[in-house]
Image (cartoon, rainbow, N blue to C red; front, side):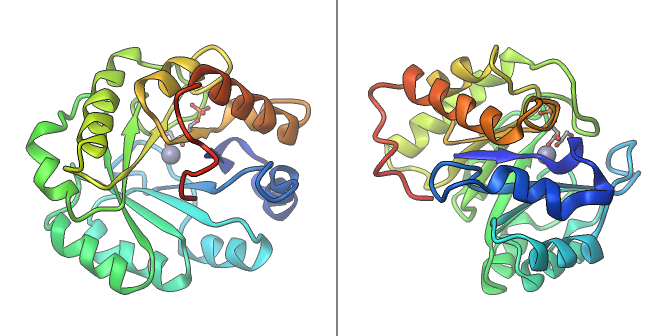
Length: 231
Ligand code: DX5
Ligand code: ZN
């Protein structure tokens, strides 16, 4: 799955920017990644629930909301209730991540848990048993266009192993610095869903960039059954 991040899009034209990656079903973007930043958990400020509500009306793409905010226990469920497909909170910010996962799921969304590059996976494996998606950050959260940190791929490999052996059921997502130079290593490590901001919206043709990234993933992982993978 490819999830373009609208952080690198033109915020005054979000409906058009979503349409630019929608494409033919199964060929364009799978999810649209929406970075919510509060200026506290990360030193940058983007958008919040009113913009997400408008986007939900403006695009058929499932919204993958990545909440880089303090106190997600208070705010995250609103995104699920609004209709976001996947709502991801940071384990570093959540007070009661297990209760939060249940609340997100009860509101009809997938529940996602994200780890910053310096946050280890092991202490959170039991928590992840309650989650649907794991978002491994491959840059320090806050800004698009940063350099990919290959050392986080160890966490991807660990998560892949836990999923493949039946210990976890999460979909493994990666976010930060994903482009034509880095996506194959991420695919080989076992990522299911690739977030890409500047590599998609910085391209002349965003839809073509999505298609090219997808082709690279498929070519780099001949042993994986992508056609049978759940979306
Ligand atoms: C960064 C955001 C990312 C960002 C990725 O904190 O979470 O989703 O949009 O941008 P690129 O793909 O340019 O690194
Ligand atoms: Zn993100």
